[in-house]
Image (cartoon, rainbow, N blue to C red; front, side):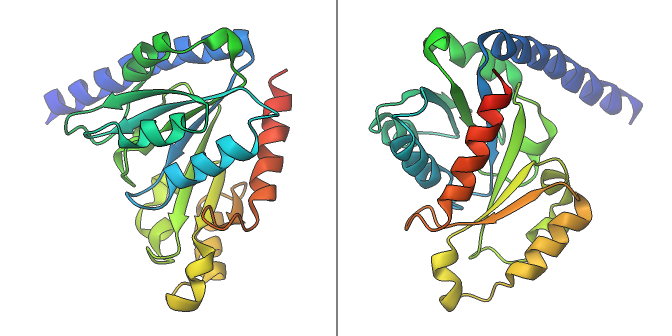
Length: 219
């Protein structure tokens, strides 16, 4: 058991060293980096498509896409005109800082304001690995159930924002917004909870306002 603990500790420590290198790179270039996390199908890519399109006249943005296979999502975000680079983990359940460090070599960092890292769809593993981000942002679809923060506490405990996505489906699913909010704020009193619909655009102004505020703080 002690050997296993040592291996895990070494992996995390190595990841954190590379994450610090990434943070310094983003700090020097004044790039806001966000680690976007959720379960599969919660709407991360749709949110990015909408965000990249709506804010393209304000910010120069790029996306590092993480998936087990295919470059489908990278093609979708690239269609908005943003820079995009794909990471296929070949079965890995999360991105790590080494993957991101290698991926950003394909980006024009000197012409960038905001970098989104769209992590692999998973409510467990991505929370454990820093990828050099300024903030972690978690999406929770109303189709998933309002108990997810309680069942997967770490991700919501360390996230700055919880986007409650697909609120346009609320009339058709059993989901209590207040219950989900309460579960999350018990874990993290500072988490900002934003009910949105990436598909219809509902309440995305709050999300965009948060992005503007955090980008300004990097300058």
